[in-house]
Length: 191
Image (cartoon, rainbow, N blue to C red; front, side):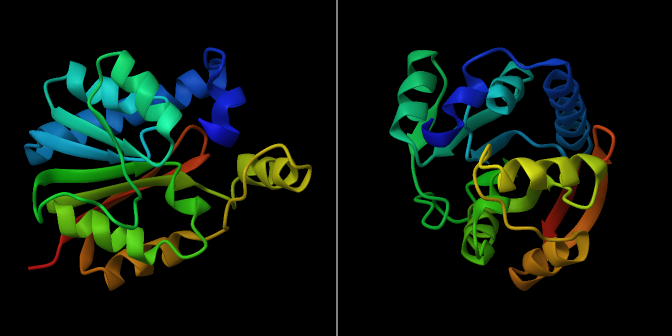
């Protein structure tokens, strides 16, 4: 897991479990409302969301750029592939939805990864990113400054929307999770 290994080595704390529960609710609601049958998770990391999607009847696959992540998830019986988010090796429109959580903020320029997500999605792209203007976001900034977490590039809500619109996506829904800690955006491919 590279630089995130210490974070996932132990079970999630209360705050982390609360965030995952809220992410699960968003995924569940979106999957049911929009008829999602198959999905790809970009940057599947620990596999929390991937497991949830599969457990709830969505045929899902995870991709990550860390071999150790793929090895662990594969050993756990989860479908995971070694792949770079900037070069997704799937057929155009293969998935109902491409989603990511806590991934795109690590890209200096996430436009290519967003474009790739749009390309392999038949209809929807779901992006979940930290909200750096929240109270928790300011705490995260301190942790980054102190060298406790990997680099995150700070973007506001409108900048995330513009980046996705440039990839031909249209905002359908958005919201915040876990006391405003995280933003989520559901986009649809333009018609």
